[in-house]
Amino acid sequence: MNDYLDMELLRFTTAGSVDDGKSTLIGRMLYDTKTIFEDQMEAVEKSSTQKGLDHVDLSLLTDGLKAEREQGITIDVAYRYFATPKRKFIIADTPGHIQYTRNMVTGASTANLALILIDARKGILEQTCRHSFIASLLKIPHVVICINKMDLVDYQQEVYEKIVADYKKFAAKLEIPDIHFVPISALNGDNVVTRSKNMDWYDGATLLYLLENVYIGSDYNHIDCRFPVQYVIRPHSDEYHDYRGYAGRIASGIFKPGDEITVLPSGFTSKIKSIDTFDGSLSEAFAPQSVTITLEDEIDISRGDMIVRTHNQPEVSQDIEVMLCWLNAKPPMPGAKYALKHTTREVRALLKEVVYKMNINTLHRIEDDKNIQMNDICRVRLRTTLPLFFDSYRKNRFTGSLILVDEGTNETVAAGMII
Image (cartoon, rainbow, N blue to C red; front, side, top):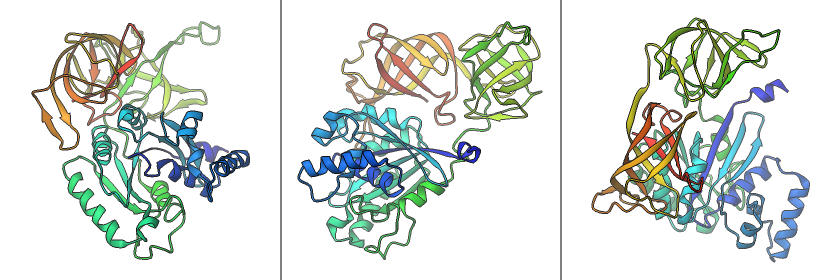
């Protein structure tokens, strides 16, 4: 049981255009790795028969909403969980439609890896470019391009190689450190979990092998120590009369008892006395563990403060530049104010100016049109009421990300990556 709990977890997101088989691919993976319950399979078989299909429609396994099943499209982000003897997986199945770009941003924000599907008959489409750009913007370290529906182009090697060449040309403009390509047929299971006899010209790994073996140990930043405080623990019991601990999730870095630390924003310094968990104390803790830190000195610390190493501190400022993905149907008004959530800190923010918008297909900046609409990606300047303690998103995905919330409706209107 402990081995199972200690297994490494890979979070991946799926993206691509409408109808290029994302849901079928995930259904195929769940089916071929035998992680589906029998009653789920029976429901899908029944549904497929009702639709008059001569095969089992595996995409129905992931389309969780009834409306999605009826329309045959994915609307919201569907999270699916499965495990093999090597790894545990959380999949965020995100929609292909342009109007749901925001859902792709939501699903991709915590992912180690993005699966981007391309229909072998259609090649690279606008959505391929859009999703690849978002994957690079969100600094997803690994990308796997699945060239799907190879069965519909007679498993031709030339078709696969042309798409690989086209994609490499486009991706040269993006910052994606690790790209893999796999020719597959999600419908028939070619190269998904088992090797394809129809594509003996392909000598690379199957998709599942890639997912099980891609190295994610270095995806976390273990250099810059950042611990946003979520909660102050004061038990007030006889046994722990003087206990005062600071609970939270380590955003990055490695903390050890004895380390010299500084608390932001106060600037007070101390040393770590202990790092406690439910199972006992640790000799070291690192991202993304959730722990309670105690200090040698009594310092006034509350939620939203950050414990950092004295000689390695984040930037502290009220003026920040952010790449923003606008998620709301209502565009922002000039000088609009929002609630801003960053790590465990909540402040108010003013949208000072839009620097430029991005044309996602050409990757060019649009500087003469600054009207932000839903799904637009733009660079903006924000001013906050209190300072934030942040790193650039490129350096640290946790301390470099934020969201903006409309205080009137409580809706999340934008997701931002600090530059």
